[in-house]
Image 1 (cartoon, one colour):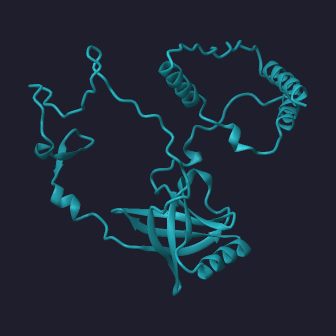
Image 2: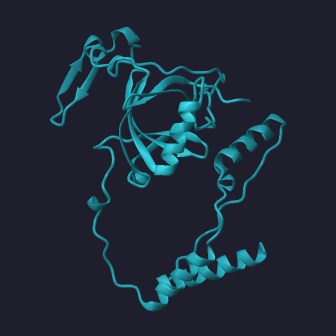
Length: 262
C-alpha cells in the first residue's frame, strides 16, 4: 500500500518556496486492548468522577487548572487557552543551515518524510544542495495547532523532517554525577577492546523487533484457535565476582556464538 500524505506545506527560505507533502516515517504497531468487566465481560468506560461523592462529572463541567509548587491551583478558562493557540500556517520556515553533525541525537524526537508536491524540480534541487553541502536545515512550523522546531535533512534520495525537543526538555550530560571508581587495569581494557571487536558487524535493523509484542500476538492467535502457549523464561544471570571475569565470560560467549553462526 502506498504511503498517504498526512499534511501539505511548503519549505521556505531566502525567497525559495518548495511545495511538499508530509508522511509519517513510523508505523503504529502498538497492540490496543479493550477493558472488560470481569463478571459479564462487557466493555467498560472511563469517566471523570467526584472523589468525594463518586458522581460522574460531565466533560462540560470540568475546568483545567495548573498546580503550582506551593500547592495552589491556577484555573485556566478554555477561551484563555484558545487565544494562545498559534495561527494555522503551511510554511516550514528554515531559519538557518548547520553542519550535518551539529544536532546531537538527544534532541531528536519523531521522524517524518517530506515528498514533492507537484513538480519536483525545486524539491530535488534542494535534496542535491543539502547532500553536496552536507548541511541540515533548522525549521519552524505550525501543524494542527501546535508549534514545532525540527531538522531538515537528506535521507536517501528524499528529505526527512525530524521534530526536535525544545530547550528545557533535554538534560545535558554534564548535569549527571561525575563518574567515580577505580582506574581499569590493562587486562580489563584489553578484553573490553576485544569484546567490542568481536561484536563488530554490519547494521541490520530488521532483526530488532518488539519481541514482547510478537509473543502477545502469537498468544492472541493461539487463543483464537483454542491453543495455550508457554514461553521460555529468560536465563538466570549469575553474579560475577569482578569486571575482568564478566568481560572474559562475555568475550568467550560472543566468540562461540560467532563461530556457531559462521
